[in-house]
Length: 486
Image 1 (cartoon, rainbow, N blue to C red):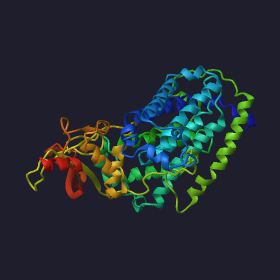
Image 2 (image 1 turned 45 degrees about the horizontal axis):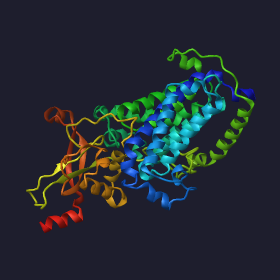
Image 3 (image 1 turned 90 degrees about the horizontal axis):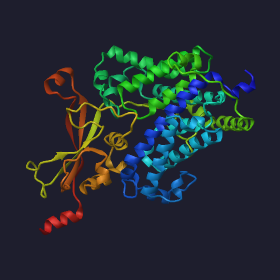
Image 4 (image 1 turned 180 degrees about the vertical axis):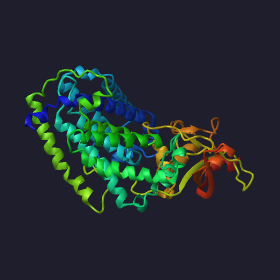
């Protein structure tokens, strides 16, 4: 292939179109999540206040615009700016812009979201944050509609896809033995962090089909990624396998925008001929990138090759890291998912009471309901993805360990005792709308999907058994003193 072809690949114009428009939509969702949730979780009076984090972590470890100054108002400005820029990409406003403006829009988007992620602490410690940042960074160099997309950047998306899929496949076969004996999906649909409306049905598929699911997963993650390096139609076939597998995951669970970004990366496997069969879009005539831009692409290629040493070595390591960034800019990362599978589902149910004095059997407790995570036994698990409920996800992790390992949990209880409005907006139902509770407690339950018979008889999607207290009843100290004085 001539060297010039690496800088002008008109055969991938449709790939560029799909990648940029869908990534713009995912950025839009990510910034809306920040607008709706960041203040309560990480704001000035949040569960893990960002100003406290910024005071203790230097810029070199967590590059962020907020090192200059943080305020909830500034966070809102950054987030709404991200929404506007993302929307301009989705509707195609930047397609007619000069190359420099195109690059600037995508670069600002990446910088804004990087600034949020790097102060997001545990609430932003998910692989799909790094995945969006890395894909969004590569998109800077795809160019507007009139320019032929650079083939070298298309290959960077394929390299990203390879690390996502192959890393996930290796972490599975190296990790939980249920991936090797093909039994993991006997449990996973029930115990995954956020089941969706179809998860109950997937869980009750016959066990032989669960074995087929696991075999298909191994093929999609350990074989198909290798085929991405081959020419069409082999790479087309690999892309189809990966897209279908990711679609299966979309149908069976809520994984934020992980599946959406992975599908976007898989689009890089298809040329115009392949995508043209499903996208009736006229491919326009295109110009080659300018000479100065080719120099930028050479520098980008060298940088990506250098940064690829660490994730490539990680893939070969017996101590493979999962969802790890080797630099604070979240570029050329290591990925993976579900190296181990939980066999039993535990859920934390938070309750409150207005009673000023607690008794063993006479106190009435009312449950708080979350927007996404299981709670009400009769509520079918909702479809959330590609939106992301950050507190609901962290509640899944908290149920598997002590509250001491989750420094945001006790502050959450305090906010509930105060009827804190931003915090309550994160929940689905507040049983104390008129006055805050006197006490709250957290109880640990074992949840499981109802059987088909139990579902018919009770109308419940879930069955549960009490394990015990996760956090015993607590109240605000000043309110307890006031009650004693009365």
